[in-house]
Amino acid sequence: MTRTYQIRTFGCQMNVHDSERLAGQLESAGYVAAEDSDAADLVVLNTCAVRENADNKLYGHLGHLRPSKTDRPGMQIAVGGCLAQKDRGEIVKRAPWVDVVFGTHNIGSLPTLLERARHNAEAQVEILESLETFPSTLPARRESAYSGWVSVSVGCNNTCTFCIVPSLRGKERDRRPGEVLAEVEALVAEGVLEVTLLGQNVNSYGVEFGDRLAFGKLLRSCGSIDGLERVRFTSPHPAAFTDDVIDAMAETPNVCHQLHMPLQSGSDRVLKDMRRSYRSSRFLSILDKVRDAMPDAAITTDIIVGFPGETEEDFEATLEVVRQARFSSAFTFQYSKRPGTPAADMEGQVPKEVVRERYDRLVDLQNEIAWQENKLIVGRKVELLVAAGEGRKDAETHRMSGRARDGRLVHFTPEGAAVDRRVRPGDVVETTVTYAAPHHLVADGDLLSHRRTTAGDNAEAGQRPTTNGVSLGLPSFGTPPQAPAPTQGGCSL
Image (cartoon, rainbow, N blue to C red; front, side, top):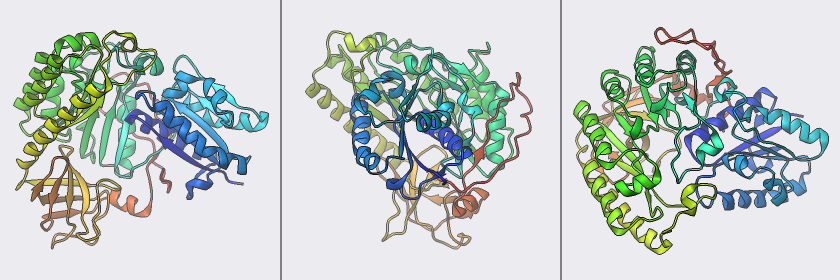
């Protein structure tokens, strides 16, 4: 009998990308996506270990799955990702109904481990200490018909005191430029319009093969790929951010004027304790250079509130940087103690009530700034890549949602003389912004243009791009290699 699967993903974009690889492997092994998630023969939990409640989230999900496992003994449960890498055999001790535990370095082992668990009738735990196979060489079943993640590297060479990722993902490993460009071309050949280049510190790409300018070159090479309309990347590190990347963003037409630049703190003393290897003046100078080259650039960030030892003066320094930076949005976090990180044992742990009060003040300030910045967009024309399952589709107004080139979310009305039949996710429309809110824009007028796309055709048909892995080992930039022949499929996670 054909076995069905469901993958539940927690955490960052890297985990989302890994889940696409897990889905590709499972389908290559004969599994099909479950139409009814409650009846899946296999449930895979791809976990995150960054936040304090990650453990509670995992074991809560496992607790909810236990009755299904009891009722259907043939059902299997697998746990992977960063928390699996950290907790290892502890997971099957706390949840003995789990069949497979695998780590961040061996996601390619999942089908084999599942088969071994069935054959041996006992849990299989396999955690490797270093990367076995680069994830991008594995088959993938993409989540979106029009937008795709492309990993340029895995792992991290930094030693931020609050972060557990380097110990779980390992040292940075870079793909060769030809491999990255071949994967991008393969996606574009299947109709994908937008790619996001992905790395733990994406702009340090090239360190492994000795080219500190490699990331800027990679952006420029993406500009030569016919049919690729939008290129984004996440997340860079301010300490490694170089002027050539800014030039590549400004001079390559399909690279979006959007930059996610993690601040973490505006206090130089706290940044030092975090081992962030830059200071607030350096951070703000990067933003000035970006805006000089691209005045329309939208800049977003990450900020941690309540890092150990943070004083009111330190927090005020963060607020001041936020005022000067004028972020279009910010991902704000209350500091979360993670065992195994240096910060967890630091003196001066800030009381939760103080952290919460500071967090609320930061959010209020950032919301006000974002609203002011969004109001400046009212009256402007924006090009939108129509999105599926993002924002809202109001039953009364029939609004749909899309992302502007600068990454802003826009709710629009899919009406007007320019509409060519029905507007679909993956299509491209142009409209005029009529209203601004802190976290989105609204365009209630008729569309100025509507372009139907192959991505829209595929989304309408329920098709998602599939790639069989690209490992070409090409050493140089220049003309991208011929992409592998695409295959079509109808699965969606």
